[in-house]
Image (cartoon, rainbow, N blue to C red; front, side, top):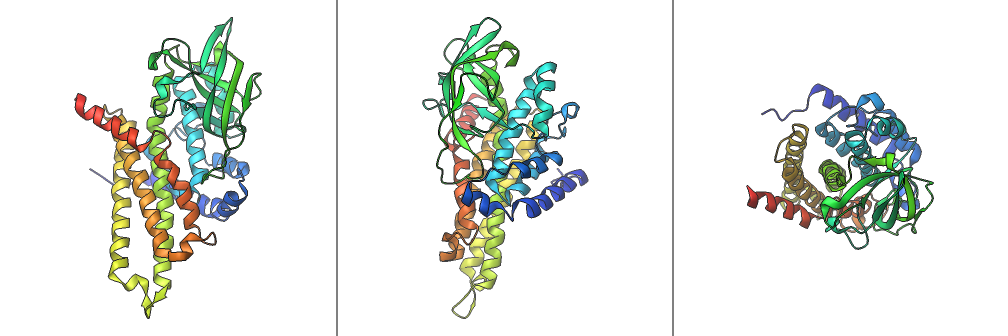
Length: 379
């Protein structure tokens, strides 16, 4: 086993780190404070290939793998987890079109998504269907050469701003086999949005309900066959879980870097607080947790790239561990800052607020345990 990144992956990592330091970190505080969606910065990221990381290159994607993606997202999230996480969702939605769309759909949608001329959103969650996603109520009724979609999607990143919404809706029986996937374009009659949500974190990306009221979507915008939607949604989430785990590691790593600097500079009882063994033990545990989570994350990404039969379970394990560890490390970094960690003059509290939701979205960490246990007990 070789745990080293390839020369090419180190290059991706360096490019992402430099971009994050120069184009994201100096603005992240203002984006959070003023709730700015940094479209120009996202399009700059797209110029580097970060908007279609694992989309095929014939439509403008980078054609890379999931391990490449987690390396990139960790670096971006070290500067701004919220913005990196939106980019993750955009990549997931674009990949679903690339993987399950036909040639016409790929050519119509993906070039503008890979350049981020257009933004994308993933629409699965509903007010009454969160962890029990297969119980979703949004319906898609055949209407000539179109479908009429009616229902509501909740907590949609990019809601009200995105140009493309990948929507899961029910075309058949109850349960997962009755769900299909559709690409719904902004401006379609019958498509509207709820108010922008007031959130603890993730303030650099808009979040709103997506409301469909007799929204007519051409049959040519259905991804795959009727009944494929839940499978498409779940396969998208395997990669999404890796990416959000990487965003947790990046944010936590940034918080730990700040804590290391602070504990060296902050003096109490006549010496730097880094000189106290209690501080050293805390820092050692933080570093160990991050390294362990990163190793599992990279293993899961390699498994997904390789088509391993256990990839879904490993992705769930990695997401659970990385998001829990990331939040815990960030919380410890705040503690090491004392009162300074709690005020907005320091970045720790912003990162803490951003990372908390990672334990909820892309499947709660409780659902990750369900996925893992189910696989263990059926082998």
